[in-house]
Image (cartoon, rainbow, N blue to C red; front, top):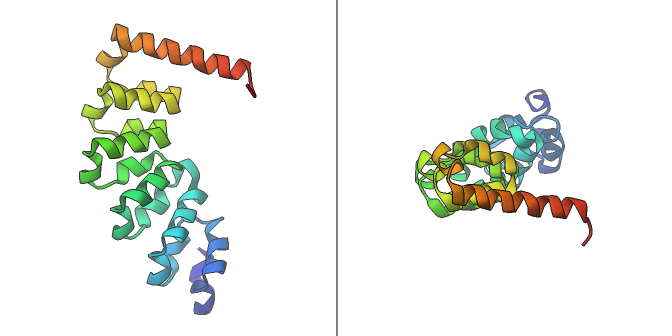
Amino acid sequence: SILRFVAPEFASDKVFVMHVIKSDCTALKHCPKELQDDSSLQLAAVEAGGPQGSAALELAPQALRTDRAFLLRCAKITPQALRLAPEELQKDRSFVLEAVRARGAALQFALFEFRMDHDVVLEAVKQDLGALAFADTSLRHSAKFKEEIAYLQKAIQVSIETPGE
């Protein structure tokens, strides 16, 4: 990262660091601790990494990696946020529901019990039809669930065919 080679006053400048993060999502590891602890900079780093922003999230301070609100903001950007959440949150159904509502693909990182939970899977699929691939097989083969997915697909098709209505 360029931050390894700049004068300390630049590596400590939040505005400068924000610009560097846009091209190097892992740059924060070369900043002073007070900037590493800044949730807005950490979120910007995750955003810079996009769907693969887990590299930045893995480098975030432990305090942020255990912060429910921060992780849910990250879940909107990368499904990896659920994988990197502490075990306590990974077992929390309400957290998992919020994560898959934000990013359906997060279902792939949900505990098995949630990949077979009708409501969790349905919320994930509403956000991303591709999340269906991560659902438990028995749930995917359930007649009631298939019916709901078919209805959802029709609703999506209608919204695509009639934009702006």
